[in-house]
Image (cartoon, rainbow, N blue to C red; front, side, top):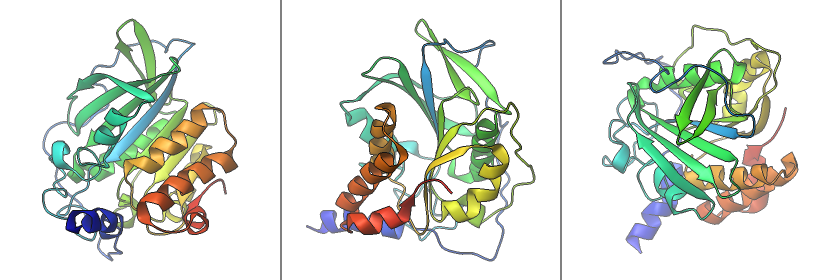
Length: 277
Protein backbone atom coordinates (compact mmCIF):
# COMPACT_ATOMS: atom_id res chain seq x y z
CA UNK A 1 0.00 0.00 0.00
CA UNK A 2 2.85 2.38 0.86
CA UNK A 3 4.58 1.66 -2.45
CA UNK A 4 1.36 2.33 -4.34
CA UNK A 5 0.86 5.65 -2.56
CA UNK A 6 4.40 6.73 -3.40
CA UNK A 7 3.88 5.78 -7.06
CA UNK A 8 0.70 7.86 -7.25
CA UNK A 9 2.34 10.86 -5.62
CA UNK A 10 5.48 10.88 -7.79
CA UNK A 11 4.01 12.93 -10.66
CA UNK A 12 3.19 15.62 -8.11
CA UNK A 13 6.47 15.31 -6.21
CA UNK A 14 8.42 15.68 -9.46
CA UNK A 15 6.56 18.85 -10.38
CA UNK A 16 8.45 22.00 -11.21
CA UNK A 17 9.06 24.76 -8.75
CA UNK A 18 9.58 28.35 -9.69
CA UNK A 19 13.04 29.71 -8.95
CA UNK A 20 14.16 33.32 -9.41
CA UNK A 21 17.72 32.14 -10.03
CA UNK A 22 19.01 31.08 -13.43
CA UNK A 23 21.07 27.93 -12.98
CA UNK A 24 24.28 27.45 -14.94
CA UNK A 25 26.42 24.31 -14.68
CA UNK A 26 29.85 23.43 -15.99
CA UNK A 27 29.54 20.11 -17.76
CA UNK A 28 32.25 17.49 -18.27
CA UNK A 29 33.36 16.38 -21.68
CA UNK A 30 32.42 17.45 -25.18
CA UNK A 31 28.82 18.02 -26.16
CA UNK A 32 27.31 17.19 -29.52
CA UNK A 33 24.74 15.22 -31.48
CA UNK A 34 27.01 13.58 -34.02
CA UNK A 35 27.85 10.26 -32.33
CA UNK A 36 27.02 7.44 -34.73
CA UNK A 37 25.68 9.80 -37.37
CA UNK A 38 26.22 9.15 -41.07
CA UNK A 39 25.86 11.49 -44.07
CA UNK A 40 22.87 11.46 -46.38
CA UNK A 41 19.10 11.34 -46.13
CA UNK A 42 16.89 8.79 -44.35
CA UNK A 43 15.10 6.08 -46.30
CA UNK A 44 11.96 7.56 -47.81
CA UNK A 45 9.68 4.84 -46.45
CA UNK A 46 10.61 5.39 -42.79
CA UNK A 47 9.29 7.80 -40.17
CA UNK A 48 11.17 8.75 -37.02
CA UNK A 49 9.93 10.03 -33.69
CA UNK A 50 12.87 11.61 -31.85
CA UNK A 51 12.49 11.95 -28.08
CA UNK A 52 14.76 14.20 -26.00
CA UNK A 53 14.58 13.31 -22.29
CA UNK A 54 16.42 15.32 -19.64
CA UNK A 55 16.86 12.91 -16.74
CA UNK A 56 15.25 13.90 -13.45
CA UNK A 57 17.87 15.56 -11.24
CA UNK A 58 17.34 16.74 -7.66
CA UNK A 59 20.65 18.60 -7.58
CA UNK A 60 20.81 20.36 -10.92
CA UNK A 61 17.16 21.05 -11.77
CA UNK A 62 14.54 23.26 -10.16
CA UNK A 63 12.23 20.42 -9.16
CA UNK A 64 10.58 19.42 -5.93
CA UNK A 65 13.02 16.66 -4.88
CA UNK A 66 12.04 13.05 -5.45
CA UNK A 67 13.58 10.07 -3.60
CA UNK A 68 17.35 10.25 -4.12
CA UNK A 69 17.64 6.99 -6.05
CA UNK A 70 15.22 8.30 -8.70
CA UNK A 71 16.56 11.84 -8.77
CA UNK A 72 20.16 11.17 -9.80
CA UNK A 73 20.42 12.67 -13.27
CA UNK A 74 23.64 10.75 -13.96
CA UNK A 75 22.06 7.32 -13.37
CA UNK A 76 19.66 6.38 -16.19
CA UNK A 77 19.05 2.88 -14.80
CA UNK A 78 17.20 4.16 -11.74
CA UNK A 79 16.01 7.54 -12.97
CA UNK A 80 12.36 8.47 -12.54
CA UNK A 81 12.04 9.49 -16.19
CA UNK A 82 14.05 6.61 -17.68
CA UNK A 83 14.82 3.34 -15.87
CA UNK A 84 12.20 3.52 -13.11
CA UNK A 85 8.90 1.68 -13.49
CA UNK A 86 7.12 4.42 -15.44
CA UNK A 87 10.21 5.83 -17.14
CA UNK A 88 10.67 5.83 -20.90
CA UNK A 89 13.01 2.85 -21.13
CA UNK A 90 11.03 0.59 -18.81
CA UNK A 91 7.59 1.54 -20.09
CA UNK A 92 8.41 1.27 -23.79
CA UNK A 93 10.35 -1.96 -23.27
CA UNK A 94 7.12 -3.48 -21.91
CA UNK A 95 4.94 -2.11 -24.69
CA UNK A 96 3.41 -4.52 -27.16
CA UNK A 97 3.59 -1.83 -29.83
CA UNK A 98 7.33 -1.20 -29.75
CA UNK A 99 10.37 -3.46 -29.99
CA UNK A 100 13.78 -2.34 -28.74
CA UNK A 101 16.28 -2.97 -31.53
CA UNK A 102 19.31 -1.01 -30.33
CA UNK A 103 20.73 0.38 -27.10
CA UNK A 104 23.90 2.48 -27.19
CA UNK A 105 25.86 4.98 -25.11
CA UNK A 106 26.61 7.92 -27.40
CA UNK A 107 28.91 10.86 -26.72
CA UNK A 108 28.21 13.11 -23.74
CA UNK A 109 25.78 14.72 -22.86
CA UNK A 110 23.76 11.68 -23.93
CA UNK A 111 23.96 8.85 -21.41
CA UNK A 112 21.89 6.38 -23.41
CA UNK A 113 20.15 6.08 -26.77
CA UNK A 114 17.37 3.61 -27.41
CA UNK A 115 15.99 2.77 -30.86
CA UNK A 116 12.59 1.10 -31.10
CA UNK A 117 10.67 -0.16 -34.13
CA UNK A 118 6.88 0.03 -34.12
CA UNK A 119 4.96 -3.12 -34.95
CA UNK A 120 3.57 -1.37 -38.04
CA UNK A 121 7.08 -1.60 -39.48
CA UNK A 122 7.89 1.86 -40.83
CA UNK A 123 7.93 3.95 -37.63
CA UNK A 124 11.07 4.21 -35.50
CA UNK A 125 11.41 5.86 -32.11
CA UNK A 126 14.80 7.19 -31.05
CA UNK A 127 14.85 8.10 -27.35
CA UNK A 128 17.86 10.02 -26.04
CA UNK A 129 18.58 10.25 -22.30
CA UNK A 130 20.49 13.42 -21.39
CA UNK A 131 22.53 13.87 -18.22
CA UNK A 132 20.32 15.84 -15.83
CA UNK A 133 23.07 18.47 -15.60
CA UNK A 134 22.89 19.04 -19.36
CA UNK A 135 19.44 20.60 -19.52
CA UNK A 136 20.62 23.47 -21.71
CA UNK A 137 22.10 21.03 -24.23
CA UNK A 138 18.94 18.94 -24.25
CA UNK A 139 16.73 21.97 -24.87
CA UNK A 140 19.08 23.34 -27.50
CA UNK A 141 19.28 20.06 -29.41
CA UNK A 142 15.50 19.63 -29.29
CA UNK A 143 14.88 23.12 -30.68
CA UNK A 144 17.60 22.77 -33.31
CA UNK A 145 15.75 19.70 -34.52
CA UNK A 146 12.30 21.29 -34.37
CA UNK A 147 13.53 24.22 -36.45
CA UNK A 148 15.32 22.00 -38.97
CA UNK A 149 18.77 23.42 -38.21
CA UNK A 150 20.16 20.05 -37.18
CA UNK A 151 19.50 16.99 -39.31
CA UNK A 152 21.27 13.67 -38.94
CA UNK A 153 20.86 10.06 -39.94
CA UNK A 154 21.88 6.77 -38.34
CA UNK A 155 22.02 3.26 -39.73
CA UNK A 156 19.96 0.61 -37.92
CA UNK A 157 20.47 -2.83 -39.42
CA UNK A 158 19.84 -2.20 -43.14
CA UNK A 159 17.71 0.92 -42.64
CA UNK A 160 18.76 4.58 -42.56
CA UNK A 161 16.57 6.65 -40.25
CA UNK A 162 16.51 10.38 -39.62
CA UNK A 163 17.14 12.31 -36.41
CA UNK A 164 16.57 15.91 -35.40
CA UNK A 165 15.11 17.85 -38.30
CA UNK A 166 14.68 14.68 -40.33
CA UNK A 167 12.20 13.34 -37.77
CA UNK A 168 8.47 13.42 -38.40
CA UNK A 169 7.78 14.28 -34.77
CA UNK A 170 10.07 15.53 -31.99
CA UNK A 171 9.27 15.36 -28.29
CA UNK A 172 10.84 16.91 -25.21
CA UNK A 173 10.15 15.07 -21.93
CA UNK A 174 11.20 16.07 -18.42
CA UNK A 175 11.52 19.11 -16.21
CA UNK A 176 10.85 22.43 -17.93
CA UNK A 177 14.38 23.76 -17.95
CA UNK A 178 13.23 27.10 -19.36
CA UNK A 179 11.94 27.85 -15.85
CA UNK A 180 15.55 27.76 -14.60
CA UNK A 181 17.74 29.02 -17.43
CA UNK A 182 17.86 31.13 -20.57
CA UNK A 183 18.82 29.96 -24.04
CA UNK A 184 21.19 32.28 -25.90
CA UNK A 185 20.21 31.09 -29.36
CA UNK A 186 17.22 31.75 -31.58
CA UNK A 187 15.64 28.94 -33.57
CA UNK A 188 14.02 30.25 -36.77
CA UNK A 189 12.73 27.67 -39.21
CA UNK A 190 15.55 26.58 -41.48
CA UNK A 191 13.80 24.80 -44.35
CA UNK A 192 10.11 25.85 -44.48
CA UNK A 193 9.07 22.41 -43.23
CA UNK A 194 6.45 22.27 -40.47
CA UNK A 195 7.31 19.55 -37.95
CA UNK A 196 5.07 18.08 -35.27
CA UNK A 197 6.21 18.30 -31.67
CA UNK A 198 5.15 17.31 -28.16
CA UNK A 199 6.50 19.02 -25.04
CA UNK A 200 5.67 17.05 -21.91
CA UNK A 201 6.93 19.27 -19.11
CA UNK A 202 5.39 21.71 -16.63
CA UNK A 203 3.80 24.84 -18.16
CA UNK A 204 5.34 23.99 -21.51
CA UNK A 205 2.91 26.02 -23.62
CA UNK A 206 3.71 29.19 -21.68
CA UNK A 207 7.49 28.80 -21.80
CA UNK A 208 8.05 27.15 -25.18
CA UNK A 209 5.55 29.12 -27.30
CA UNK A 210 8.02 31.77 -28.56
CA UNK A 211 10.51 29.12 -29.66
CA UNK A 212 7.94 26.84 -31.30
CA UNK A 213 6.37 29.75 -33.20
CA UNK A 214 9.77 30.87 -34.42
CA UNK A 215 10.60 27.31 -35.49
CA UNK A 216 7.35 27.08 -37.43
CA UNK A 217 6.43 23.81 -35.72
CA UNK A 218 3.04 22.29 -34.94
CA UNK A 219 2.47 21.77 -31.18
CA UNK A 220 0.46 18.57 -31.06
CA UNK A 221 0.59 18.24 -27.29
CA UNK A 222 1.90 20.42 -24.48
CA UNK A 223 0.82 21.51 -21.03
CA UNK A 224 -0.92 24.41 -19.31
CA UNK A 225 0.13 23.70 -15.72
CA UNK A 226 2.23 21.43 -13.47
CA UNK A 227 2.75 18.01 -15.02
CA UNK A 228 4.34 14.65 -14.18
CA UNK A 229 6.38 13.67 -17.27
CA UNK A 230 6.20 9.89 -17.04
CA UNK A 231 6.17 7.71 -20.12
CA UNK A 232 2.54 6.60 -20.32
CA UNK A 233 1.34 9.97 -21.66
CA UNK A 234 3.91 9.96 -24.45
CA UNK A 235 3.22 6.31 -25.25
CA UNK A 236 -0.53 6.64 -25.72
CA UNK A 237 -0.28 9.97 -27.54
CA UNK A 238 2.13 8.35 -30.01
CA UNK A 239 -0.18 5.36 -30.45
CA UNK A 240 -2.93 7.69 -31.64
CA UNK A 241 -0.50 9.71 -33.75
CA UNK A 242 0.83 6.69 -35.62
CA UNK A 243 -2.73 5.56 -36.36
CA UNK A 244 -3.30 8.90 -38.08
CA UNK A 245 -5.82 10.15 -35.54
CA UNK A 246 -6.69 13.86 -35.45
CA UNK A 247 -5.31 16.21 -32.81
CA UNK A 248 -8.45 16.04 -30.68
CA UNK A 249 -8.18 12.26 -30.45
CA UNK A 250 -4.46 12.44 -29.65
CA UNK A 251 -5.27 14.85 -26.83
CA UNK A 252 -8.08 12.64 -25.54
CA UNK A 253 -5.95 9.49 -25.54
CA UNK A 254 -3.14 11.28 -23.71
CA UNK A 255 -5.55 12.77 -21.18
CA UNK A 256 -7.26 9.43 -20.54
CA UNK A 257 -4.05 7.62 -19.62
CA UNK A 258 -2.81 10.56 -17.54
CA UNK A 259 -6.10 10.59 -15.65
CA UNK A 260 -5.84 6.86 -15.06
CA UNK A 261 -2.39 7.04 -13.48
CA UNK A 262 -2.82 10.28 -11.53
CA UNK A 263 -6.41 9.61 -10.40
CA UNK A 264 -7.77 12.87 -11.76
CA UNK A 265 -10.74 13.29 -14.11
CA UNK A 266 -10.30 13.09 -17.88
CA UNK A 267 -11.83 16.56 -18.10
CA UNK A 268 -9.14 17.94 -15.77
CA UNK A 269 -6.42 16.12 -17.71
CA UNK A 270 -7.67 17.65 -20.99
CA UNK A 271 -7.34 21.09 -19.46
CA UNK A 272 -3.75 20.26 -18.57
CA UNK A 273 -2.75 18.47 -21.79
CA UNK A 274 -3.62 20.90 -24.55
CA UNK A 275 -3.07 20.94 -28.28
CA UNK A 276 -2.35 23.71 -30.79
CA UNK A 277 -2.25 27.40 -30.06
